[in-house]
Amino acid sequence: MNITQLTVHELIEKLQNKELTSTEITQSYIEQIKAKENDVKAFVTTLEEQAIGQAKEIDEKREKGEITGKYAGIPIGIKDNMCTKGIKTTCSSHMLENFIAPYNATVVEKLNKENIIDLGKLNMDEFAMGGSTEYSYFKKTANPWNLSKVPGGSSGGSAAAVAANMVPWALGSDTGGSIRQPSSFCGVVGLKPTYGLVSRYGLVAFASSLDQIGPITKDVEDAAILLNIIAGHDEKDTTSVNQEKKDYTKNLKQDIKGKKIGIPKEFFGEGINEEVKASLEKAIKTYQSLGAEIEEFSLDIAQYSLATYYIIGCAEASSNLGRFDGIRYGYRAKEFSSLKELYKKSRSEGFGAEVKRRIILGTYVLSSGYYDAYYKKAQQVRTLVMQEFEKGFKKYDVILTPTSPTVAFDIGSKSNNPLEMYLSDICTVSVNIAGLPGISIPCGVDKQGMPIGMQLIGNKFEEEKILNIAYAFEKETKFRENYQPQFIQK
Image (cartoon, rainbow, N blue to C red; front, side, top):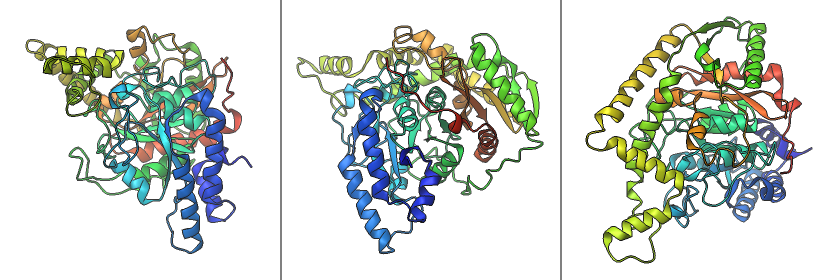
């Protein structure tokens, strides 16, 4: 039995049946990290000794009947933009290279309450700005399916670690597709919850009206389990929504007869790779065979969503990152002759090229004379995007699109062309603009053996619908049983 290939719900079952101990599970993942980290480069910080110590303690308490938590002793990886008390939280930036968080993010507190073991902090694009994890200050993460390819971003470390069986599941954050796109590229499941369902307290902000924490897992059931743990109202987060607690695993069943799935024709047009399109068309036929009602319709927002997203996202980034000035937070330049020079040098040296690019663009669209022309107009378009989705959900249970227009691309092929990199978000950004839930699940591979992702979008706070429809497809197609990462060398 290869422990690291098991899903979390399989690990839980084996823990309950006393077939495995938390120590055995944790040790297996640590060995896998040691075997694969040099190739994949998924971690910024590993917590091997701490994890083993915690696992042994949990096993001892379990033997004495002192631990009853269902998920106690299951390891996890956490994206490095979520605060973990006493542990480095770098956002993969030189600016926060030595920052040790003095408190835990709410999601981390919830994991700790369940006695889930933190295996370490996962690599990402600096301050979550990027779509390939090539903009990390520390290292470039590789895709486990082919080490010459990117894992996607910004949660590339999280998706790659799950795909490479270095962690059984992970937390990522999604501002414009940063959970779903890397999950698509790495052949795993990535869920972006409804805005306000999961607390953002302790998540280092990129764009506050778009950011959302969510699970990256091996299968849909694990995504539902992790969402159960992290979802819920938090008084520390003013955007957190207070609503009745749900069990997202309860509705997971294969019967989706009569469910209405809308196919927006604009998401299958120009720019979508032919193999991706063919894989999605095959998936649509699978849904038809399961009894779902499929209908094509017009969702004419894709052409506006990308520009809207980058205006709002960059404007909010400019505002949020203003605090990193060399005095209050972050890296401070060694030599300076005035306060102005201290600001200039600290920010110039502390931030990478992509972060600077977005700060400059964001400052421009917020500046006097341009605010109305750009930022205000983008917020008006945002309302139109929401209204278009509302119309769609009056008719359909879920909306089906590609997650990304392409499969994972070669490392270095787009990093010098920001516009081309931004276009890889075209299928995902509208979900964040409208504050909707979206899930990416694998639906096949291309001729080179690289995974292809399918996105299911739901109405606000209807995660159980997209999880159920994703679950039915997963059970029918058995992607994990048929395909595994190949670790093809560069």
